[in-house]
Structures are given as C-alpha cells and as structure tokens.
Length: 154
Image 1 (cartoon, one colour):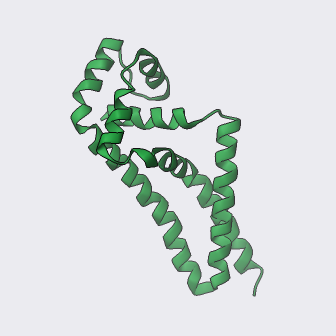
Image 2 (cartoon, rainbow, N blue to C red):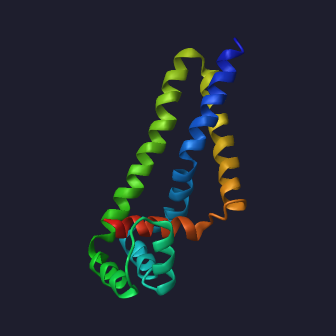
C-alpha cells in the first residue's frame, strides 16, 4: 500500500471534519427535539428577555425592543417546527454528503483509504468540538439559541 493512499485520506478527513464539526454538534444537541411537541416546548422557552438579548448578539437579526421580539416569536410559533426541521435536515444533508461522497470515491482507491478518511474525520470533529466548547465557550445553550435565531430570522 502506498503511503499517499493513507496520508491523503486522513488529511482530507481532517479538513472535512473541521468544516462539518459545528453541523454535527448542532444536530447532536437538537436530536431530542425532532418531534413537533418537543420542539415547541423548547421554542416556548425562548420568549424571555435574556434570549432576546442573546439572539440580538449572536444573530444579524436585530430586534429594536423586547416587545417586537416577543411579537415575532409568537407569530412564528405555528411554523417554527417546520423551519426548524428544514434547518436540521439541511445540516443532515451537508454532513451526509461530506461523509458519503469521499468514502465512495476512496473505496475505488483502497478500502483502507476509506477507513483512514473516517478516522481523520472523527478525530477532527472530536478535537474541534472540544476546542469550541473549552476555548470559545460554545456550549449546548449557544447552539440551541443559534438555531432559535435562525428560526426567527425567517
């Protein structure tokens, strides 16, 4: 086996893992809220002044007042789960493409290349997500608030 067939997939896996790590983290934190009932319960928790301030900081959606935020929050309630599923499904698609397409291509080179790609991918996602949690303080609340801001953005 050529060393290039082992090193190249690992490097490509590390690069791909870096790009999809935040999608994987977001999907992981939202996995329990895929049903409409569970998501609407979570969505109801975002009608607070704390979340109004947080969403104004992390999102480009700027609400002038808490009353405006609360009004939009309530008006989006019926379509919130649909928007949420659309966001999460697009993340699933991106993650799936980054995993499946290279693995299918590497199968033709050498089965060990596919394994090397997956190892690089897993290592990259693990270490980058750890870096985000420890150094950037991007915890579960950050990702849940981020998706809520995307739902409110429309």
